[in-house]
Length: 319
Image (cartoon, rainbow, N blue to C red; front, side, top):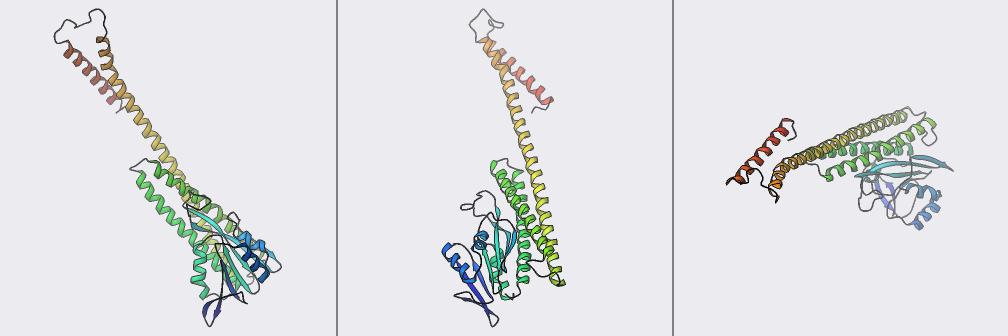
């Protein structure tokens, strides 16, 4: 789907075709024929559009005949039924920002909060001609949502850990593993986004803000926030790894305790069984064979033997 927006008298209206200083939002489902028509209509490389909807596209920028492409990765809640990764709670998808002299094209392979915010809130206050500010605002909001999702994951991890304190089911461990997979996406793409922004600040090819102190400081603030989000992701990853190792050791220890108790019970029951087996043999007369109360004597001996073994195992803390 492709939608076109333009500012008219401080209002944003939807238009039928691309015009000068308009916003273009390209979102799923995609029609490659319409993408090709859009490419021809505003004279941009078709590869810029196709690369932006590639789920595995890395963060980068590219310039081709005054058409600029910026690709950053943004977090989304995972659609477990239709995603390429059907286990992680959160994944990342690329957002393509294509800048021409007269147009701002925003394209992504999945609905996400950054684009929703841009076309519902920010578009009313941003000047489409001020392309540097548009890109910086998208960067800032992207870091904000990374941080928000990281906090949500940390809260979810804490709740799962509380459940694990009273349960050793595989369900809770699987949930922790899903969070761990989500953190892998976040750690990788936060670092990639940060490197992209650092390269853009250093080269000044895409954003011509090197001589604009206000915008340069703004980008540096975004880089600081991005670095903090990256550190958060690393810290949460280390905490989760430690938690997984700790609960793995606890579960293994609990299994050993159960096996030890079962072994102890087997040994305790083996002694009465052994005595009863001897007296069940059809051999020469056994001790107490002529006694009228032989059964009760044998039962008493069996119970005493089992009781002694139980006392010994309690002393060595096998129970």
